Image (cartoon, rainbow, N blue to C red; front, top):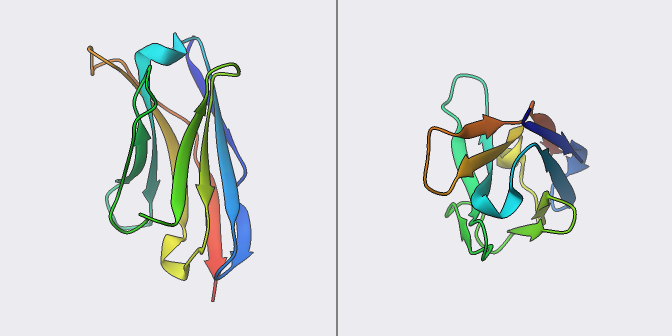
Length: 119
């Protein structure tokens, strides 16, 4: 059974930092690209950052480049999202995502964690 368990969300002031974590179980971790998405009410879920399976190569949405960093801890099957210089527009529910490297139908989501940035 695949599980993605997120942690680290919360309330922070504008300019502050938060670190999200997502621990994956039930998957061969390096076979999966790991991503963070976010969603606000009334809008589609958007990709924030992705790290590939075995190499951990990172890509980012333009809106977070230079402020967010995605990293993988292969020893603990965990992916982190370090968020610095947070802005009120970063407020959203953040979701962890795992997608198998070849079979994209093998796609899993975490339960989401709320990030709120006050101005």
